[in-house]
Length: 277
Image (cartoon, rainbow, N blue to C red; front, side, top):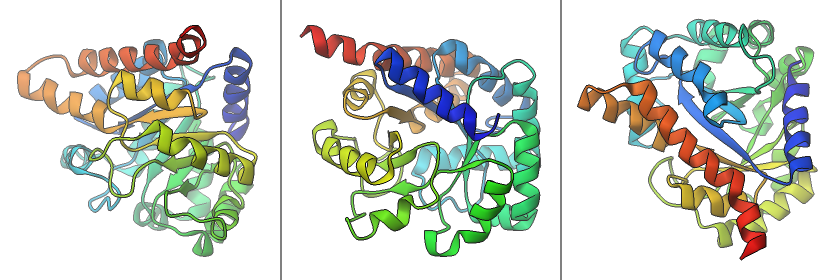
C-alpha cells in the first residue's frame, strides 16, 4: 500500500467533508509493550492517521514534553529497528490507517537510507518526516523512499516565503506538514485565523493536503484548525498524558486514548458546527 494509503485516506475524508485527526505518539514510551498497546488503540479512539516518533537523543524541534518522551523511550532500550517492529505488529490488525514515521537524520543515516526505506515499507510504514534534512540535502533520502513507494513529507513554516516554498514542496507527497508557530513543539498555541492564509498558500503550491501541527493542545483549538486545514496534528498533549499517567500510577493507555477520543470528536464535528452556527 505505502503512499497510496495516505492518498486514499485523505480522499475519503474529503468526500466526507471533514479534516483528519492525526495523533503523534513516541515509539517505546513509556515502554515497548505499553506504547504498542496505545498504537493499536489509536484508530478506534479516532485517529485518522498516526505519526510515530522514533526516539533520538537530541530532538531539536521538540519542546520539553516530547524531549522527555524520547528520553523515556531511549532509557527503555527503544531503537529505530524496534520502532519498525512495533509498526509491523500494528499492521497485523490494521491495514488501512496510514502510519507516518517522524524523527531525525542520525538514526536514518546509521541504518542507511535504502535499507530504511525497504525495511519501513516491509513493516507497513507509509511515509517519513525527517525534521533536520533540508531539501537541498535530501535527494538521496528522497530517491530511497521513492524506490520503496514511501512518501517524503516535508515541513513548511511561517518563515517559508514564496521563493522558498517551491523548493520545500518539491518531491513531497501524501501531504505537507505546516508548522503553525515559530519555535519548538508544545510551547505556543496555534491561531487558526493566522494559519488559514498560509494553509491556502501551501496547498496551492503543492497540490497536496495540508496538515497543521505544533501548538494544538485542546479540542477547541483542534476544531478551529480543522476548519481551515486538511488535518490537525496533536503530539505534545498526548505524550503529556503518558507522563501524567506514570506520575499518578494510572493506566497510561487509557489516559492517552481518552485524550485522543476528545480531540478526534472535536475535529470530526468542526465543520458541521461551523455550518450550523
